[in-house]
Image (cartoon, rainbow, N blue to C red; front, side, top):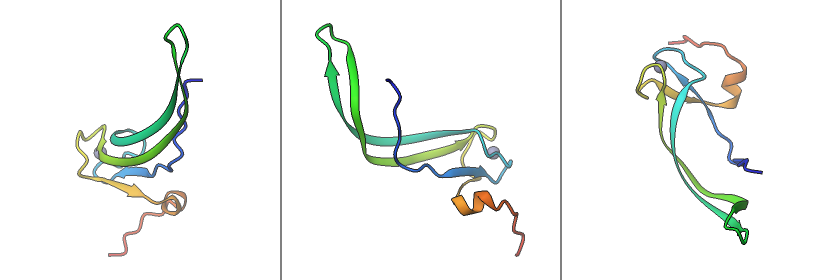
Length: 87
Ligand SMILES: [Zn+2]
């Protein structure tokens, strides 16, 4: 109880400026629909929460304090972690 499972797959991020892979401030706008189940005493249990819309507004690197170097990394790229310096 109390855990919200986000069904939407969240991409991983990387900060190209400092190499950070793990710490980001992510601002998300989302619209959810849920069944609000109140007890007679007024306690609320949220059930069947469903994400209708989800938009990532901003991803900021914790270390840099801005999101200018932050890129999304695809799942395949994350696994084969080979830095490409082809250019
Ligand atoms: Zn950074």
